[in-house]
Length: 294
Image (tube, rainbow, N blue to C red; front, side, top):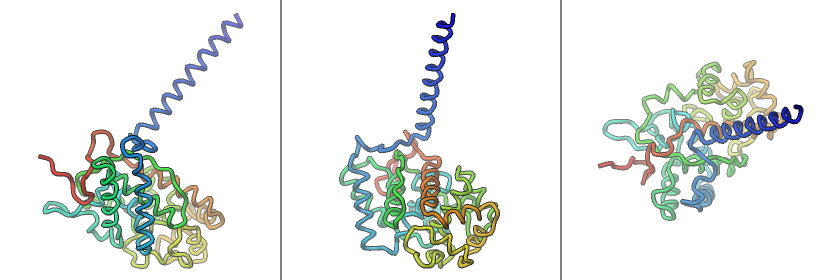
């Protein structure tokens, strides 16, 4: 009787483990994104993007933070689908031509990367993935952590300029609004604190200088500055004083590893926000124009 009970328990345990593994695998693929999506269709894609960003960074270092801000401005508005890169048409204003995109400078450089990838693998790699991966390489160029990011996104066909204000908080928003908007994407409070160091508000002309001392390096110096009341923006003051965010500001000021940990996790969540995958959207031939469909 005891042996039968043990056999039943063993079989039951195996069933539970198998079910858990299956559900975990399913949840990982629910978004349709996977690590190294192009390993068979364009194995050199990520290396090409990496090398192009390195070359462009050497020539145009003043655009460094734009690589990172592209992720925020594209993925933070409904979907991570490169809608940010579309030009205006007679019917719609492009996202990149709105006030909220002030200071973004890398659009033509993204087209340069797209052309390099197209020469290797025509019609395979999406502009959405190029935007995300170039952002990751920009983070590394700025001294930040390397973040493994999934790929397999497809490109949207329409601009979302009309809804930007519903998604992107600015430096005049209350901390409650800022936290709520990021929470809707799945980013928690320490993630928000980490992102606000690196993705300053474009409406503030001095957006890079809110990190005095190391304005062109991605590090935790910003948190020490705002704790010393050296922040320039309203949101800087709120981060340093709000009871919900101040504990994380203090931790990030003390530990760059702690900052990088939460920054990397927040970027990962942001880049997986509601992507188009499978047969959705398209693979644009040019990143600034949707493909023509007859």
